[in-house]
Amino acid sequence: MSYTISFERVGRNHDVPNLVTGTADAQVIAEEVYRIARRHCGSRDLEVAVDLEAMKGNIYAGMHNAGTFTITEDHA
Image 1 (spheres, rainbow, N blue to C red):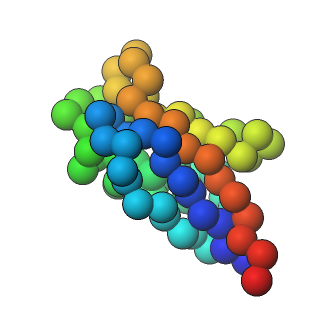
Image 2 (tube, rainbow, N blue to C red):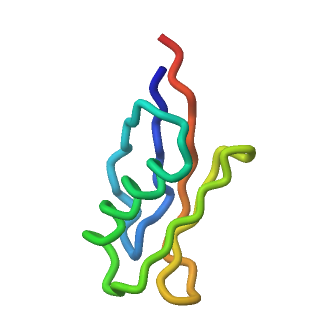
């Protein structure tokens, strides 16, 4: 099973490519999103929150919203 992470925005960038991951583990998703967010955000004080129940997440830079994303299950 794979999952696609679609970014609405990361930092000021609205054109971040989707990320495909092979797990629905919140910690793994947060780490993968963090690696992408580091490339697109000026701040180094980043935090990623994943809500698997809602299949959504947020990226925070300090106390500010630095992006949002959705998680969808890929059906093969």
